[in-house]
Image (cartoon, rainbow, N blue to C red; front, side, top):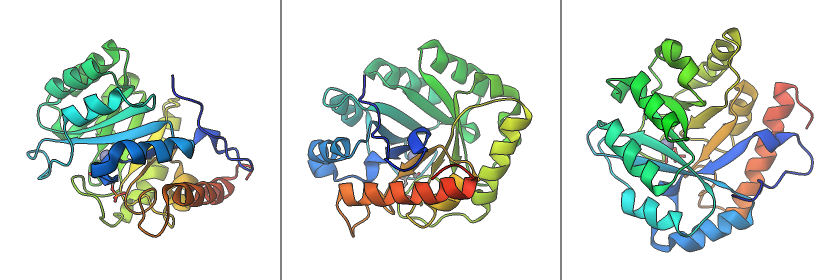
Length: 243
Ligand code: DX5
Ligand code: ZN
């Protein structure tokens, strides 16, 4: 089991998790990079699995996830950006992962796929592109353990936040509250030091940290993680929590 995430001393941010996006890491020195992150209290890693069809990219593959599984106790958060969800669900379930998000836009049989994921004892999530209405999850909401709100169009790191997605996080929180569903909202895409306070204030619970935060070129991994904790505190203060 992963070690409990380091609780930042002066906020109630234990419920806010940071999930470094592995595709943004130093892939030529990945084990070293992961050790740095673990030393900073990280216990959740985000893997973007792309098939070059649903999105025109393929940064990492199954072998990398499988090898890394042998090297770390971190929870694995799989973000599928593929056309054949069911194949990749089985493949990563065999490796051993803790949560899987599938895109509503790529799921022919979303309800069945989410059930398959949960059937493996893995947390199931739906990923929604910026333009996709929240209503896409209306009839699978009882199959969800989390929601992944894309704050950029999927496929590439280093993009800029789609502005409308900040309101979408607020609307997603309201959508879940109205239905009495208390599940985490994960946000993914340009989760930067500047955007984190707004995202957390809006309701984000899991932050996928990529090139604009965890792996930002201006700081070390530990320095960047510390800056993220400070940004989370600002967001919680705005959300009305103790900071
Ligand atoms: C994009 C991926 C993200 C990406 C984030 O499709 O889902 O996880 O790595 O990269 P940044 O943080 O640079 O937007
Ligand atoms: Zn992702």
